Length: 312
Image (tube, rainbow, N blue to C red; front, side):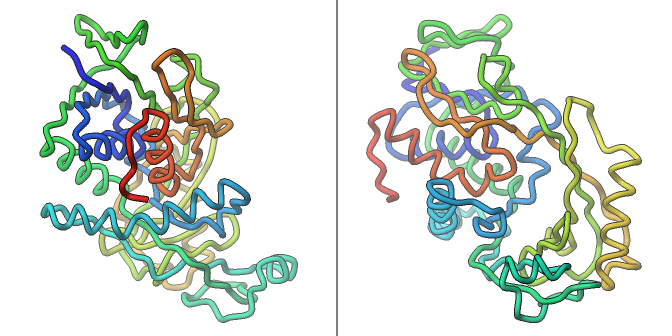
């Protein structure tokens, strides 16, 4: 089997890069192990470059992603693929005098928060990561792209191999998230857990103290814990922290009904998008900002491959 480009890893970054390449007529094979704990399936999908504290080139990358998403979602909608999203802004609620001063939080909070001293609105919003991945994967396949469920074991000399299978490609893109260490990439897992509740959500993502809220499928996404290591699932400690945070901080969620929990491994390390070997490129270390930075990352990968980016 052959392809112009083999993309290893079908999280948001990998599937978006594959879609953008296929849209430009490049023959792409997208491979994913479909392992539990992939960040995309648990991510909040936050588009909040300022509240996330980005600066310099990273802030520019985040602002590019924020500006690109409405166009991308419009493209997908034209293909009959709709994705939950909103771009009405993001808020930071100040809980201490120092936070109020640092964030210049002079406006009232748009959502009841116990102990708030004010809030500030920033440009931003959110997109539903799992729905976005599903839509991009469908669009990629509609364009003739090949999707394979395969746990890639190695890349060597333009050959990508797994189990009893292999393919050859001119270029290989590694977008393997927290599993980058298997390919010699400097990344480690930081597990995050989030709680899904029935209830009224804020008008946009709302940061307050150590957590945040946003709308998710008609309910509320409450996030998030963070712990090192590969332990799977949501444990009692994480569930208790999330429940206490929602109950104690937000009056509208005191009696909220439980909907579910999600968890996944954030890929933590120095952000890197570049060549790691002859014809092999990697995109790693996006941490909790993978969805926000995905459009910028895809654009950069296309540039490295010499593919014209007509979405700029």
